[in-house]
Image 1 (cartoon, rainbow, N blue to C red):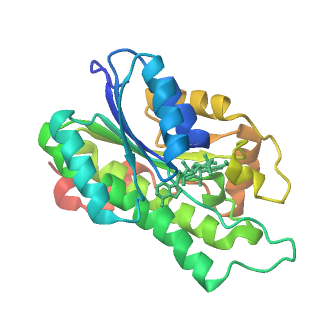
Image 2 (cartoon, rainbow, N blue to C red; image 1 turned 135 degrees about the vertical axis):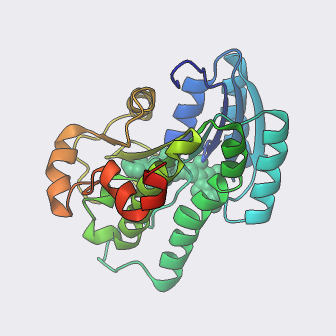
Length: 262
Ligand SMILES: NC(=O)c1ccc[n+]([C@@H]2O[C@H](COP(=O)([O-])OP(=O)(O)OC[C@H]3O[C@@H](n4cnc5c(N)ncnc54)[C@H](OP(=O)(O)O)[C@@H]3O)[C@@H](O)[C@H]2O)c1
């Protein structure tokens, strides 16, 4: 995956369903170690079995990424035994479209931000110091095309994904000199239980397997933003500006003149 270095140890949150499960299956190859996190014990165990049968070594945590301490403890213990090459912060929720057109409630909005942002940070932040010490690693945030084409019927969801996109792109530049790659994945509609709950139009919907293949291709090419399918990317980007308005070299010079000189 990285130039000259094969990634073998992965952490994937939200591995009990949908895109996370499909990524786990693709990465389940002999020689690879996977740490899988999800809340539903039965579905998580099913993913773990499928991955183990493909030859991967699997460790599972039935856990909630909103529980920072539990998540951190698990990640650091796993990393101590299996230095993590790549962490994929994929777990996420959506509120789903209300048939009556109601906006997301206050409780729903706070719960969503807690999972989609705080949960993603709880997943990646404990591992970044470990990766910096090793001067290698990869951090992947699963955002959404809604980050730059916000959905009026999913404002909280769109806002949470835009936050991940901005955070991920900033961290990509910040961690570049530490040998850590950062990629932000922005899928369009992918057939999963989450997409099933969305009542709006879902143009160019694709399967989880197709989404996982596109994500893997983007990771191999180390794309900053792995967005698909292209008709939605082309159509959605003008809605709120392109995902990255400042060229990375410029943003580094503007933010960190002292670092840019190094
Ligand atoms: N499907 C789409 O059209 C689409 C489009 C763009 C982006 N995405 C993003 O892709 C990611 C995966 O979504 P999906 O479509 O695959 O949905 P999904 O099938 O509903 O899967 C969501 C996964 O996240 C896990 N999860 C949710 N909250 C969690 C928590 N607090 N702690 C631990 N795990 C938690 C779920 O675990 P349990 O089921 O075990 O609770 C499940 O494994 C999400 O970040 C989503 O926003 C999806």
